[in-house]
Amino acid sequence: MTTVDDLKRRVADLLAAYPPESAPRQDFLDARFDAGLAWIHFPEGLGGLGAPRSLQSVVDKELAAAGAPDNDKRRIGIGLGMAAPTILAFGTPEQHQRFLRPLWTEREVWCQLFSEPGAGSDLAALGTRAVRDGDDWVVTGQKVWTSGAHKSQWAILVTRTDPDVPKHRGMTYFLCDMTAPGVEVRPLRQITGEAEFNEVFLSEVRIPDAHRLGAVGEGWKVAQTTLMNERVAIGGTEFPRDGGMVGVVTETWRERPELRTSELHDRLLKLWVEGESLRLVSSRLRQQLAAGAPGPEGSAVKVAFSELNQAASGLEIELLGDEGLRYDDWTMRRPDGVNFLGREAGYRYLRAKGNSIEGGTSEVLRNIIAERVLGLPSEPRIDKDVAWKDLPR
Image (cartoon, rainbow, N blue to C red; front, side):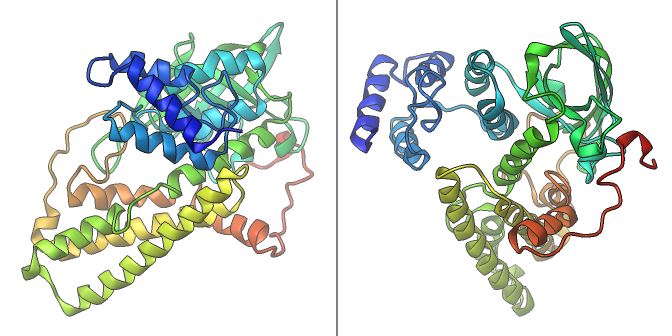
């Protein structure tokens, strides 16, 4: 069994062989993965040691103290938080070996091809078709709200392979090469002025059956693993006390006493308490995650995260008054990721509006909380036993 001392010894060996002050960053990341110190709860040979996930912090703290480089979680967050756990859970040994190492070491960036113009909140209504053709599948359809598609080499993709059965039973999950012929990425400019999101058009894209993840027709089951991890990745982000969006507002409050009013003070105190509660709940959720797969409780954390971000960014705008109306740059850009804390108040306010949509709308997540956490009766559904092709559109 791996112990804290074992991990510290492994870290010391890694640092001795690849000194952070001289070793190339990519070489260090490759060596860290090969030493089993990337994600220690993964199996040996796949960047881990089969150790308890709760011990990952030991490795991270030792490496941070030594000034060692880390991968850019903003740039490869979808790969780390969504693609990797899904590939580990449902992938073949060949898929594990092919995809996990370049994913963690940033050699390949991933995006998520799930939502469609007619299937966002109701993902199971998706219509992107995949038709078997020998050892390949031919995929045609449109995906939308795809973060980072413009910089991705691979995508996790859910398709419709059988329109003659109810919608949840006719889906199949694939790993899609974003450089394949027939893949077209178009930018979607957002309220922030940037095009962080994209539309992706798939025109007779050929995907080998070797890149299918899970069994044919079980795409919904595989997608649930992705979605549960996605909500934890978005809402369960680890912040220090007085950190995150609330921390930005409290810092302005401390440094700019001339902006204070009693009414804003009351609201700030309320948000600070909510932020601290969310931090503690997120910590407990990560502890539960360390013991197994994420459950529906991640939906509650994601809803709370969204509401807190929106309320805190709104309070910051009010606190700053006219200053809060300034905006640094409306230039159309295609960024690598979201930078809430590195931009100004106007950006935070506008970008936070998307928090209650991305990763599952708050309305859908509240249904999940009601049914799967609280055990309340599900809403009446007339489409559960109807073939997808017969559903009204």
